Image 1 (cartoon, rainbow, N blue to C red):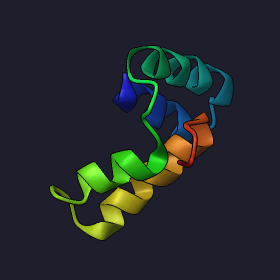
Image 2: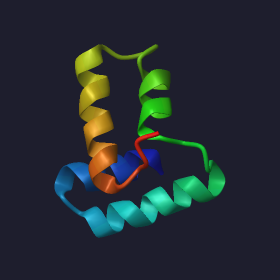
Image 3: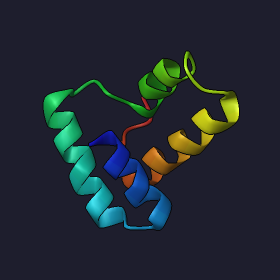
Length: 64
């Protein structure tokens, strides 16, 4: 789900991205851009984390 939300954010499909974000938040209500970025920083270089965080922001994931 998070990958779909991220893809929608990158493609400018904000409404569809928001629907995926809503699904994510139903399952994990405390997921935020910050929490996801913190998690990803253990696996990816900072540039990739920034790209993914920006896409999730555009999709409507709360900043946190």
